[in-house]
View 1 (cartoon, rainbow, N blue to C red):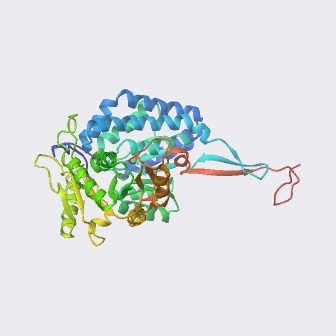
View 2 (view 1 turned 180 degrees about the vertical axis):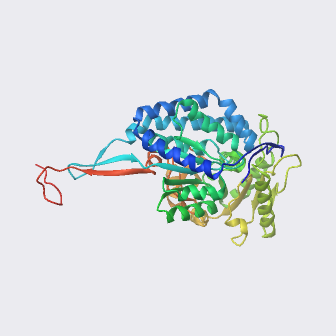
View 3 (view 1 turned 60 degrees about the horizontal axis):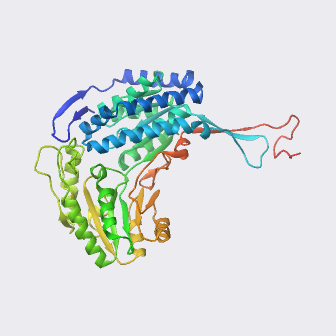
Length: 468
């Protein structure tokens, strides 16, 4: 596996990085394990919080530098990259400020003398993607470092400078060697880390295929996993939703990060034939108006996709959709310029037999469906192998909530496109994975909920102890 910076806006190779040797990888695991057993897990919560807060402060201090790495390596529009830097810093701060509360010893209701303590479990291995190279890592680093676990991160091979920069954060913040370790490992080497008995948990954000392979391997070693995988999420527009606002929000929900978001709104479902016709016309016009250009230019509204491979896959999917009978109302091809640009594309007239009906389209391509009722919209929304983050638009918030409750998904937003924050649990169902990140529930994924029961001397060998 080659770790390489290739500028998606030009196609030029910028820098290549050597992969890690097996011997150095073993030393990295050894150091992470030693740091966990002899240092990091023994520190107070306040000591760990000081380091995470310092890392967050440094991230903000060097926000421009860090944002430029993202734009250079995966083509994110610079303003969006800057927002990702700020969000990542807020996640680190959130866990630094809330870990003490999350780790409080809790009494077991109805059992005098029994409590639950939250304890770390050891080295956690994270396999992370390129589309949000800081945010995805911060979702793991914040809770796991604060609970007292140590981390080894294998980042995507096309964002090596982002990976190195995030590792530097913790070094500069004063974290001991082994607390946070970046490794430029191959897929085979990742398997060695998963198999290593010193590694106690594995978390993956990536494709369905990658998640299944990692979960199978980790399962054989009886290791806890969290899987944040793909999505093909619905954006449901009910008959009473203000149409202009819904069209604007649908463009945002589909095109944020150039459509390269697992929780992006990929399938737009409009209730009502006449409204569907109006929506298609307005949404198509909005998508067609997006301007491809240099992602560092503030006037650019359509950036490149992350790689030549991603571009070719997307173009193949569009071609397959056409052959399957879908209509392309705008876009459908490559932008005539250097780099890995795909035209903002709208597909409609998609039948269940069309291959894109059940595929995830990871880029600037939206599928639009028109149905006659709320019930049909819900049925279509749920007719997917994925279930990550749905969206419902309605002028009646209670109606929107009722529809949201019937969408088979880990998350649903009413009258907003999918968004994220440190306080909101993030995760899906079905082939979108399992487990949660962020908020308190994300804090508790890789911990030992240790039960301790203390009763008076001379008590019976088992059973509850009477309360006097």
